Image 1: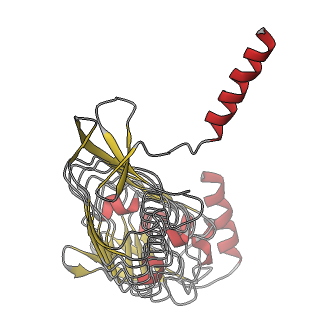
Image 2: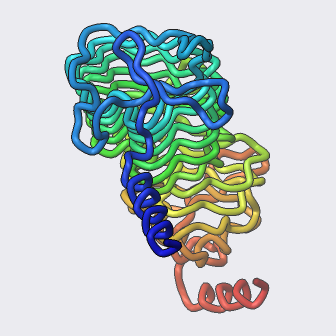
Length: 378
């Protein structure tokens, strides 16, 4: 008897675990809902198996999610849009999201190719990954000002998205978030953003401009790779309403992070203040128009071996403090610049003959001795 009972319990458990994890509890006006764990609120969820979209068998046009629903005589606020809720519902052309919603889970609108405009209310504090991935007709989206991150692949493949405003609450943009948004033309990265993961802007081939409100904070952003930086495709960086061509790194900046200005083909001059101690990997990758670099720090700045990859070191002139000029001639990375000129003390930069270590106007054995003495001092 005990064995039969035990087997029966096992069968019931097996049946329960075989049910879809997000099976809905009830349907109201064509939308499915499940009661949340708190027992007093509900989430909009999918009707059919989420792994074989569309997740609704008959849903089209503009859908309106209510702020509350009634079930078995009880009223429930609608607080969440569940994972996969409307995945692959290609006939849905619009969605109205109430202010009662605080969370929109991943994949909720993935593949909704009929969506063109979406406004997410400010009460929403979290939007999940792949949220609008593959929404090929999405042109405009308004993001809430309380989210702190844009999750991975949120807009991947939104090939008609032309612009998006990133809220100042966002600190992290995860990988592939805007990848393959081939019509995206411009983007503003707020000063709150501290990290952008790899491949975030891969194949954003229409980008023509990137705006930052703070160059110092821009230098400190962690970029996962060159494609994490929208400048790599856009080539034009703007700050305070003007294009940055003469780049003057603000004093107080301690590091220029990897890939910070990669792709900045319109940069012509660069001034590095005394506060900067390091220049990261491929920081100025492809900055082919850079023709003057002013380094104010007395001793050579530590720089990654590929920091200036793509910069023409045979024509770009490096200006350094006169009192430490010889150090720059022999410093890693900086010694690759053919023209190093001394400047300082209010004087205009004066050309220095390559190899003329002692500054006597000729290159001979005395320069070897002078170089040896400099190296002993370091």
